[in-house]
Length: 208
Image (tube, rainbow, N blue to C red; front, top):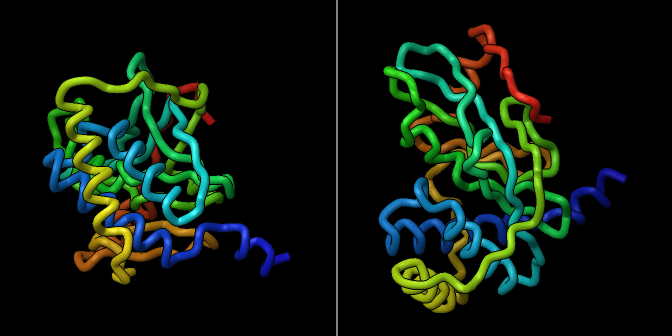
């Protein structure tokens, strides 16, 4: 059974190559992915299809614990009118590569966020992330700069797909079978330590 579960997951080399290609392309062309999760997931879906992995873009409510600069914890995310977007693979994996840069967004409090969760690519969600799917995202063809960005990103992916580079980007990742990959600054280690020594706040949301 354990061997079967390992097979029914996106291979680590595909995760590494997809993340390397997509994050590099989106960050280079858009100038940062934290403000454009829809474009990020368009690119992920497109790149994964090149590797033979089907996926769909989900939308709904999402919340995750962030660590503020004073070490305290808050629930951040999208749980109002603005939806969050993430990917679900054919293996029922939740893929959220927005989380690695989520701390760069305004947390809504006077203190800045210092750490957010690792990027997720896993079927087993950690308890510091909550998702409430509301549906599968379907979009009309974008216009203007969004269309130009997506065309440029897809073109960059096409040029990069044949590379043999399977190194993960220098970001923390939570991968299938609970495999944790930290970055060179040990961001996940510091994040995990903060969660272990602080009392978690009530989420105050109807989200599972």
